[in-house]
Amino acid sequence: MDGSVVLRGLTKIYGQGSQARVVLDSVQATFVAGEVIAVRGRSGSGKSTLLNLLAGLDTPSAGEVVIDGVSLHALSERERTSFRRDRIGIVFQFFNLIPTLTVLENVVLPAELAGTDFAQSQSMGRELLEEVGLADRAREFPDRLSGGEQQRIAIARALVCQPELVLADEPTGNLDRATGEDVLALLDRMTRARGRTLVLVTHSHPIAAVADRILTIEEGKLIPARAAESDRAAERSQA
Ligand code: ADP
Ligand code: MG
Image 1 (cartoon, rainbow, N blue to C red):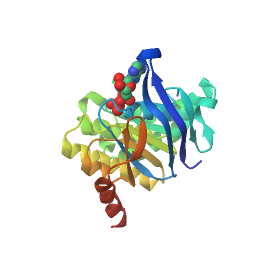
Image 2 (image 1 turned 120 degrees about the vertical axis):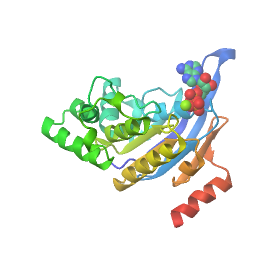
Image 3 (image 1 turned 90 degrees about the horizontal axis):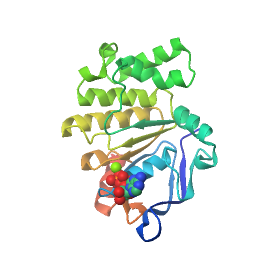
Image 4 (image 1 turned 45 degrees about the horizontal axis):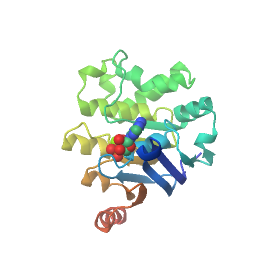
């Protein structure tokens, strides 16, 4: 129960025969519990495919994703759904808040689905809203909030079940630069404070620099980003 991730021979091929496209080609990687990993790569390189496999939302063509010693795709569909719900927090580019639920209801929904009792879910939800600076918006509906505020709500929702692993796919892709940097700093701070593993897809250089490691997807392989970028991350972590 620590958020370590091992990718073994992880392969994803779309299409068949002459149409086959190898998006991930026998990817090997280990993310240590508590690490913040930034994943980069050009559009179409397979970043979302990788995150969807990590989330158990998609099935590999070969290889495995092992989270805390559990091989995700060896689980039944039902087991995998509850594993994801209870142990993985996901932040999306387009927030994906439910418009008919209030801010607080959105945040507590995963806890309620996981069977946490009402009073406890409410108090965790309120604490998280406090932490993301939006406690006073609890009873409003998401469409009244700015993009940056909606993403803060989504971060609170992603953390309400105290997941070991947090995944974020271009969480600032829909925000202006300054707002995006604030949101990323918040996500980084909140996952580190909890000792959780964060795997973050992002294009922004200053944002990737908060990471412990920067990896890039090139030709189906997940490799360390070019030296210059990694050096910057190393300098940060020593500072
Ligand atoms: P990224 O997130 O890095 O932009 P994606 O992981 O979304 O890239 O996509 C990687 C490649 O896989 C792209 O060429 C995309 O067109 C292809 N792809 C993604 N999903 C599917 C799918 N369901 N069926 C066929 N091809 C897909
Ligand atoms: Mg993508």
